[in-house]
Amino acid sequence: MLGTAPQEALDAQIVDNADVVVGVFWTRIGTLLPDGTPATVHELERTTDANKPALLYFSNQPVALSSVQDDQFTALKAFKTRAQTWGLYKEYEKVDELVQQIKRDLLRIVRERFELPTPDLSSSPRPPSNPARPVVNVIKERQQRFDPKGRPRIQTSHFLELSNVGGETAEDVRIEWVEPDPKPTDWTPPSIGELEPVDYLVPGAPARFDLLVHMEATSNLVIRITWRDLNGEEHENLQSVRA
Image (cartoon, rainbow, N blue to C red):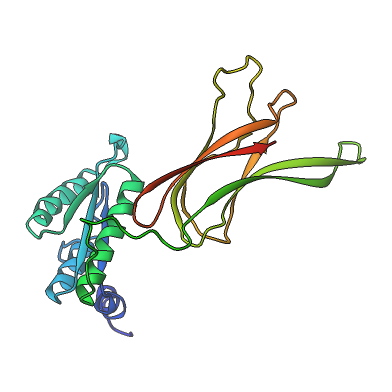
């Protein structure tokens, strides 16, 4: 809008149209307005004054002191103390903890806003009719490559594909090789590249990991798959695979 201050335009276009505001902080409070008020604080106050929910999360993760701006960190600490009086204040140590907190808080807000019933957690939740079921498969792909002299070569690439053949989403899916007991001296599982937990494994959307199969790698293996269902219950499955 011509002639409108940037913050006023931001308020009209975004802040005033928001149903809920989520603020995540670490060491900075953000840009200051001409009157010295942090823009973030202005937007949060505008949201709460309109009786809209605001959720604030402050990180306790370590930080290099050389990267911290004193004025920003001082202003953030002052705001953090003030936020405690609003009842909107939470802290977190890790990103996955933050994700779970935001999920729970947003779900609570939706339930309250639309007056939805709250599940009775005192009784065991009914299992879904088609629960999540993560499985793994070893995928081999043959591709043509050229050596330094330009001669064609066929190269076989191996992948470990993690898929969900159930009907519900699986959360925090993790996989690991299971050592046999007793463990043979030549037991050597393939290496899985960049193996990280899969936050949400949706049916029909597999995750794929590079699988480095060594010449001496054991071919018949057992892999452990763990996950949580939408009720937060933990599950485990052992699966035999051949690399």
